[in-house]
Image 1 (cartoon, rainbow, N blue to C red):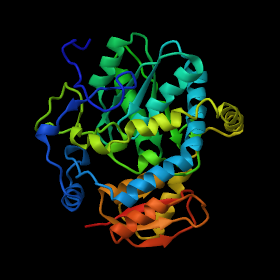
Image 2: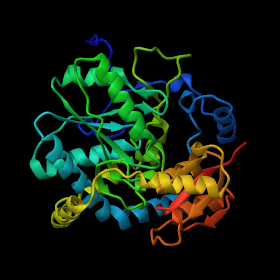
Image 3: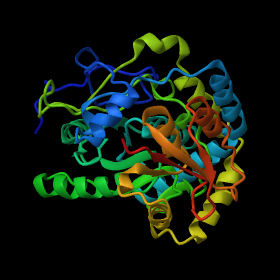
Length: 369
């Protein structure tokens, strides 16, 4: 059992009862790397989790776009949150349920699911946010901590959306490894708000639409950076790390985001039930349909490394905010509002091309340096 002295740092701008971040604050040890320098290091073999990108500071136009998008999609997101929450309740029950969101895109969604369950069932479910890193697995120290504080926990992992499904696969492998070495067992099922990649069984929608929390970085995720794992300054038996951007408190919209959507929960109850009935009629088996689109893009554009292809609104946004993009593909068959994608592409002089043969509304392609 984990010694009780391993306790996480207090992090994040959410209410204390919304989420506990099981992370170590490594802000003092890390200097952010410029996008170009970071891209060169990643393509040269440095693991992306060993450094942090410079946080994108949005323009005033972009911030108003976030607010407009939130107004436009708040109801749609509230319905999707309800659909996910009801499926989690049906699958795991509420008695020993523990929500574990994958930092950081999963955190606001985990907060919303927790608040929905409180609103509808007057129950307070524990919610933690932990790190999972592609190629490095899940933070096992955090999982041990959860079981120590919640014996018999029925853990439900939560994320924001799916792209190609890399995190779904990473989570499955990590759970197999954890279960082989521990008496406590974890279930690898992942619940997401949007599953355009068709790679999970529990989702609010499979539409590839803009989740406003994908628009921004830490300022919509409790002022917490993406997670870091770098043993040059971190201990192997400690939590994974992240930076807490306290200095961005004046522009933080994390609570505004979840509060706005929470206010819709009572009025969308009927729509949640209708949407839930439709989901129940769907074939929930992951078809990995999104991967077929990725393979087609790879072939059509002659891309050697599949890691350079980032499909879906959420991943395309990340490419524009954190990577060096080569081009953005837009699916003209989707009526989704991609204004923020076009705005970021114009800001960074990234070419935009129409491509309709994909199951996503857009796709970001990273430039090979």
